[in-house]
Image 1: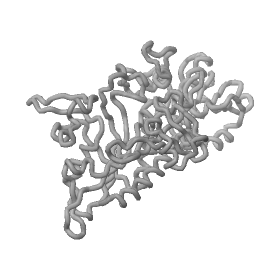
Image 2: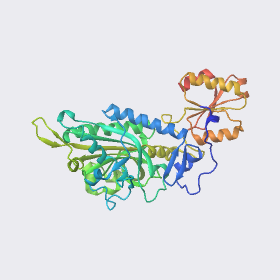
Image 3: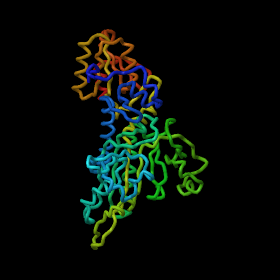
Image 4: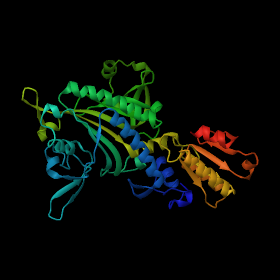
Length: 411
């Protein structure tokens, strides 16, 4: 893509009321646009990041049997009354509205009830189980405050998979597969070394749920971490009895701030019972379906990457989710730059060409702010030696290499 084709532009300053690093940098770098507190549009570059994260998640969910679909945001009152979660006294973050005929509706803040109700039309026999539908979509939560940028939005993008199994044993097999798939997701987006499987409250569903917590000073959670075992305990469930139970040494636990970037729950029959989601087993007896839920906040994950890796110059994207692999900058020599741009594209390398009529210093500053993994500069100086200037965003060193060597490195 040519940078001149973007309608969006970088900014020197973020909105004064924006306090989070992720939103400040993403707004300045023209990845998102703030509509209001907790509500952001994803501009072309930001959308490319969201789509890359989504693709990684899709691949890992599909690998364990997940089947993608698209559910609705609009939810009818009756579905949620069965579990009492329509009641504002129990759930205080609904966005509610009405049809013209007066029918009450809500914008979904999660999807357990919705998927359970949907699956009643498709689950009758043990032969219909297990089933693992998931979707990736916008969700809505009427948060009292929203000051963490895209890490806690009122409108946000997420993936939710719900497992429907015949019994707890079948559920547990999938649950362990999901746990491994989540670890692969965080590894692939560049957060694997900083993200820990964390024991947290299972609420009314089970004794424990599992969170995936990414270490960051921007985190809202406190965890107690065993770095050797790569396991952590959320402060909300921490006690001496719980370390003993998990086989953790109290003397080795380190307190850290972290961002919850994913979670998996055993739901059991919590939602299938009120909805009467049942199936007939091999003997023809009716049984309640055993459920689980598996969520990842995709926009939150994007914000977390910015919080964790950004430096004083701007964003630093891991290669796997960067909008483009290469930021090409020409200083003069437009014809030669366009030739290199086309060659990079022909070789399947994602390239973002700053073809604007701007001063070199402004182009370099924008490249640092936007955070593509590689910066390539072509200029009269580089052409004299039949070379280009290559710099990794995450490193300070710059090297002059031939175009042939460039193609080898970037393949």
